[in-house]
Image (cartoon, rainbow, N blue to C red; front, side, top):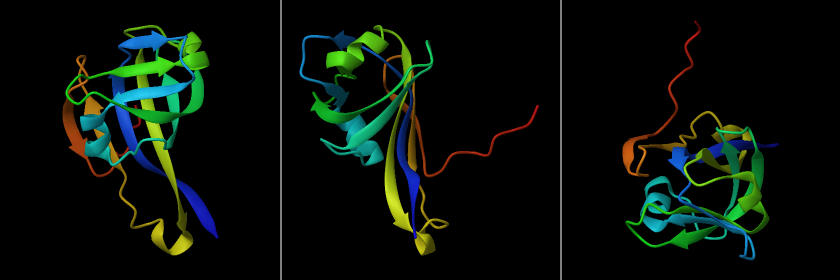
Length: 127
């Protein structure tokens, strides 16, 4: 049996652009991709914290050091520049590997700089 597990997450990235007149995808600064181990053409899920929209697309590498997070094509209708998004990649793992798997999570600031890189998410606290 295989399970689909989170592999990497870019948490609270700021959308820098929304380009409707493009074939499709999300452009992400290549430095950010390297930090979390995401790859060009990899499928990702995107959650918009501002409006609740969820979508799937694939990655196009953006200029290093630019901080670019641009939704292209039809996805551009689901975001606005300055929206806060979570970008998640997944991996299929055999059952015997799921407990040892450690996803990478990049916590972003308002300028799309990585402020913290963690190997797994902290447990949620109950209020």
